[in-house]
Length: 336
Image 1 (cartoon, rainbow, N blue to C red):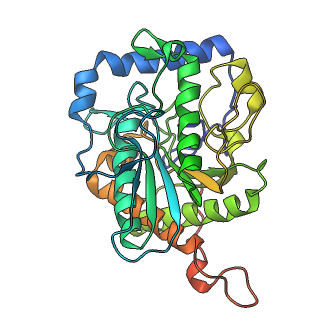
Image 2 (cartoon, rainbow, N blue to C red):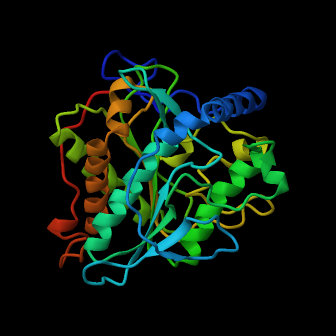
């Protein structure tokens, strides 16, 4: 989730984003409250978990990753000899953002990112891609150690290590491309819209920006085709994404761990391939939360993701950067 603002119903206080940093103590209390809230209703969370049939794949490393995490799946038709890493945000001890749909049902981000990941994986495998997913169920990705836990919750170190494990998974699988699949959460039910981020401080940032543009355009296009009217918040630097920093080191870092560069002594296992992170809907907007938790909504988003990845790898046209197939689908910009 991230503090990007937009609105379908009334203007946001800022045309784009609220300030991305708050005091460390307030951020820490807020994050632990969200995790505690989800843990307290763990039974309800499990009941709402998305159901997708997941066949057995190849575990990348059972020593480093939890059972069901970091799993590779071969193509089901043809073979492009290309590997895509998909990360279903949060999971296990980390429910992510928490919202409510129009019927008053609680919606947990981790429950809804997973089926989008699995649906996109199925589509990509049928197009000849090898796909590695960060998780196949409601589990953490890393195997938590003592300093990763605070009782039954993640410590600040645990949150850091679980995201870093996703980068390790992508690197160990020799992925050619990375996509994080998350949903957004705002401070108001009027916050709405879809956004895609990439990191500008990596040697492959130009490729990441190209990919982020394809993802944003194609996912917004397929959602627009359904008549959902989701505000388009565009493609942004990942420094404006993410929730409140949970430590002074994280605040100083200024990037998303999934996409950002290494920092000696704090983060040493960055992703090594172009990548982006999409947050197509706000689960704190009741209408968008209903789309995020619906099987049909998840499948639509997965279709846009699959299309963007296929376009990213489309052959270059003579005399141009992309073939027509590799050009983002265009749609009218939306007001935010």
